[in-house]
Image (cartoon, rainbow, N blue to C red; front, side):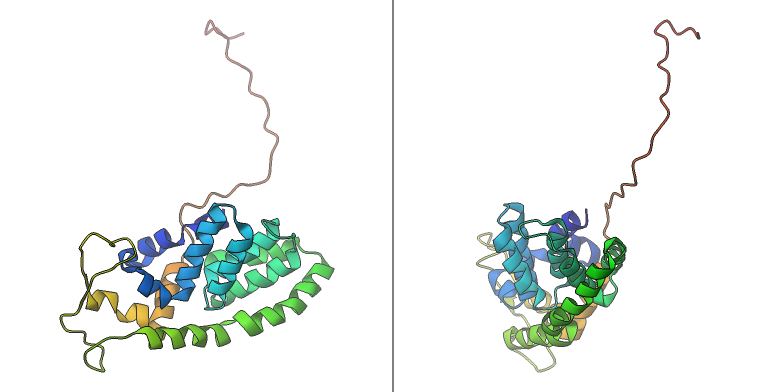
Length: 233
């Protein structure tokens, strides 16, 4: 169920934190590789191209995308497109839970409870390499550098974009002759790293909606069928 929720990430983003999905042109996504590769990975996953999906989610994960890290964890946990490796799955989910997002924390603890002692030791050992490559200390600066480089705005150094308008050639508005205002496209929450992290926190800290929890199977006493004539017997 967690994977299903994460694969609907663009819809979740729009619903939870008013992220404007219509601004996601090719140019916008090129400057946001975390979003770009998560979306590409979701498409590959849904078409059952799991090898490709894993590579794309890993690219997103390198740019501090916690949902992609969680999906990778689930792929290893279930053996979807890869050899099942639950110690490595836990290491990925531990990384995804770095910012204490509710669903990832809960899933991480559930995974830990399911591991034996050898798997737990293995997970902790192997997780160190993942943190060195994908942890926020290195992944956030990696993305921040791209955001600053790609934010090519004419106007003042304070971020004022004047009457700038953008006509997308790709994305949801492509071909519709609809312009996007510069102040919306270049909103600080999408381009200033610290505000972008705040936006992500607003999106992911709350539990995913629409979750269905299935408990253990239970034996339920049979209920006698009612007589067809309506009379008690």
